[in-house]
Image 1 (cartoon, one colour):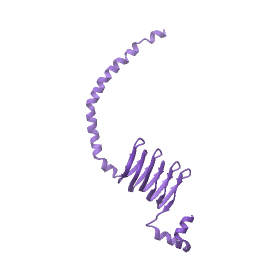
Image 2 (cartoon, rainbow, N blue to C red):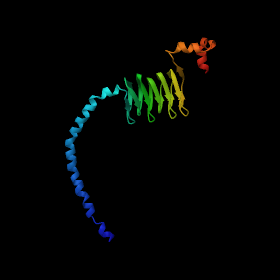
Image 3 (cartoon, rainbow, N blue to C red):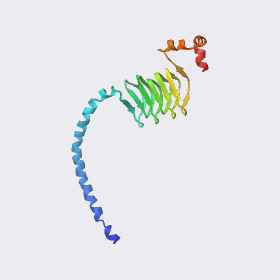
Image 4 (cartoon, rainbow, N blue to C red):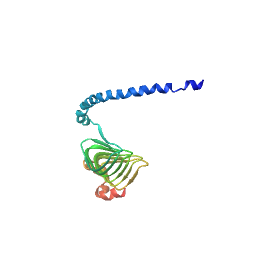
Length: 183
């Protein structure tokens, strides 16, 4: 009884269907150029959408040696060696990223591993699983519990220096360099 229900007759039914699939792929091959035409308008509007604040991304499988400069936000998930310079933009080093480079941006956020100096005009953040070996120069810094950091920190408040000096006691204003290294 069970042997009668499992003959190769059901197996023969899918085989003709599989044979009909190549004819479907041949028709989809003819529709492929239509798909390319549909994507062309998206590519032509790409610069307009990135200026609106979208983020460029270097995927985890990408390995770059050299210099990266640009005028848009960037997230790095792969490996980079060299220099990354995004003056007025946000740079995010993803959790899977391995960066051996000097980084310069308005804002730098580190989730992955960085070996090199970081310079941010606004702020630098090292998240809990992030690792930075190098010197930091920024106006604001945030290092979460669990993050690894080895290097020096220089707080650079070029625009706010006059205001903060008046808020400090007189004895710390005179010895500005000594006070910065003792804390």
